[in-house]
Length: 94
Picture 1 (spheres, rainbow, N blue to C red):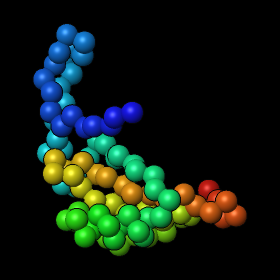
Picture 2 (cartoon, rainbow, N blue to C red; picture 1 turned 180 degrees about the vertical axis):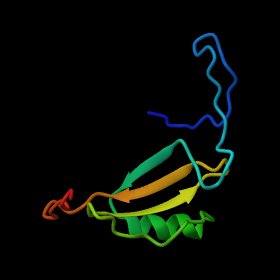
Picture 3 (cartoon, rainbow, N blue to C red; picture 1 turned 30 degrees about the vertical axis):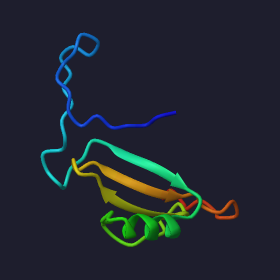
Picture 4 (cartoon, rainbow, N blue to C red; picture 1 turned 90 degrees about the horizontal axis):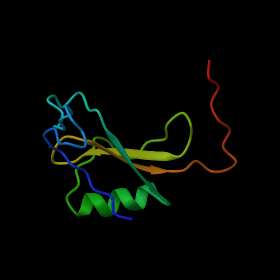
């Protein structure tokens, strides 16, 4: 499988009237690409050492696991995510 992101595309015959474009503000994005990894801390360190600038260090969300966010050159949000341990209880909804 090959995954790639198309940041810009005008309308085409197979998607009439639909254009793709990068976010126009760094505070908004229409896409969050999630890369699931076995070890978020290791992925964070490796990617950081190769020039990826993360928004924060990896953090544990309410649902468990571990994740860190970065932006690609077009402003799309990229999430590096580690699954929660099987023994983690899900958080209460309310």
